[in-house]
Image 1 (spheres, protein in one colour):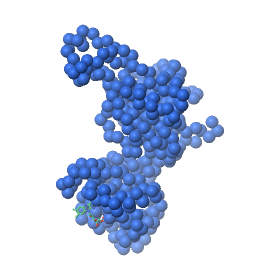
Image 2: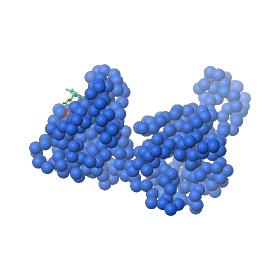
Image 3: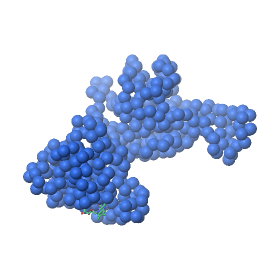
Image 4: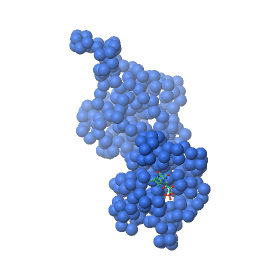
Length: 399
Ligand SMILES: Cc1cc2nc3c(=O)[nH]c(=O)nc-3n(C[C@H](O)[C@H](O)[C@H](O)COP(=O)(O)O)c2cc1C
């Protein structure tokens, strides 16, 4: 049986909103959670309603889905706790985190937290001095030790005019954390190395050879592996993508830098998933500064880049290796030949001339080669495709 993963559809999410300037962002969060298929109920603290009205929150959450006073409905603090699969508190104030940690239940949200038994995601937002304070850190650490997941705030200009770490994480990151909190941790204790993006092979300091890879597939793999509990190292060429939470990141530029990083990280890892589009060749000589046009027009001499996957397959402490074969056309036989020649355990074939499966789109249509007959999967999001690929790390019972 394949790993059970949880998405947000058919998930009952209890959103807590507390008294921070970031409270208005909860409107967007509630909409995003609902877009993902979750049903959302909201508990607002008294202080939060000084920043955003319950009416605005009700417009996003739907009529009857917003709860404020402990005594408005005598059983709400238990019913909301029992009838939720996930609790997300965003923004989470220092005060509420303190109450959660110290076992106080003097408002509806704190009482719900105490009665609730599922996964909890906390998105703190506050001035950086409060975030760094000893008491806050201690309370947050206590909650994390008990299993709560923190979506760390970001550094930047704060509402008070100061600069520092304390801005609430983006709604995208909070939604990702919510999904991760629901994921079965079937890769716990395993190290997974993922490569992503293109490489850049410099002609001189300003010009380079590269390809159209956006890194989306590799970043989705890293995010999904982290959500499933793996310890993830993401080695990526240049991309514009936001880094997934909870992932060790090794930025590289060229194929030779990627090779070095892969060989170092992959030795002893459980799995290496090579989704990077490594440039096939690099200029034989790199010119300094901005090289004269004539020197380049005169003839660019190219040298083949190292075959990183094949080298990794020869490592002594060899991980399970999953390669990606981006082919223009439906030629899975060529991808299978590559798999065998390079020594990969699996090769994930995708047709990059398919507009729904190529570079820089959010979907993919993959065929998995290796371990028997090819298995073709229907069009799916790169996030879903990432989980399909990671399922290869979980042996079927009896296999
Ligand atoms: C303008 C203003 C902004 C505030 N912003 C924050 C904040 O971002 N984070 C925080 O922890 N507290 C903030 N506070 C303090 C909280 O609102 C206060 O501690 C309150 O008691 C929190 O109550 P609650 O946790 O029940 O929502 C702010 C207070 C004011 C007056």
